[in-house]
Length: 398
Image (cartoon, rainbow, N blue to C red):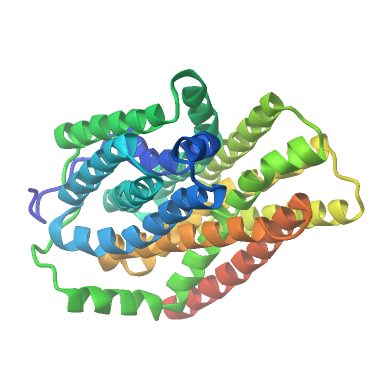
């Protein structure tokens, strides 16, 4: 283990990408196979949907645990433990004899997979300043958003060719290979204290949750990033049922949205050389807000069509891709001595916002209006949170 005096070797960025993407891939790969699994177990659709609900719950709660534990015990051992849990739970899901056992395995799988979401970003932040971390964080954030975009297509293909259980076999293999890469290539990037005191953990969270600047960046970052889950969840109903597109076309449209997120992250990495983080955060979120407002208005006027939705959502994700890495860098910099805990709380906020937005998109009789309204509300909340956090940060700095 590295001592605090020893400079940490940077973790391979491709390995951090693998670590980060494992949790988000598993969240959505199983969605296309839900009907087949329900028929296999003779379960209701509501019961099988619990495999998604508990996964989101596990991702949110687990990040609150890994952050402070990694500050005390180190990033590397906690990441190996999480990936091991993820791999074993994936195998348990592969062998699950009942729907209830599958639901339980999914919860444990999420508790393991969320280690990468929390610790991958903390590791990137450990070896960089807030400004130089933006490039790496942008790529890691992109991976968290790409997962929901490509995972359903992969899961659908595996289910069609080999059956739904093979999805979990593939996830187990991914977890095992990623754990092997971490064991061989990942250095310890933090400075663990060696002591885990829950009173200290409680105090750390109290410090973060009583910090208005951190809360503003965390809530704003979640609103700017994972609110797009609302659209991804509603996309099949919007494009196929309301706009009469095919399933193949749906995959292309979702891929284009991920391209928008990639472009936003790439743009952020360039603009950070000339723009302050504050301008990048607010400008990107305002672009997303304007697109969401236009989508709501056009839906109410019954003027939406495929080109309009794809174009405006492409711009929405461009703005989100610009905003999210800068917001994350600012959030982790508020209390630089609590990076692991801050990454955990930030990840919890992201998944909590994503879950609430997905739930909101399922309400109402019009999937398009529900999803676009959720995006608009999230962007407004994000803009207010960012402005408050930046104002307070400036006043503290002064």
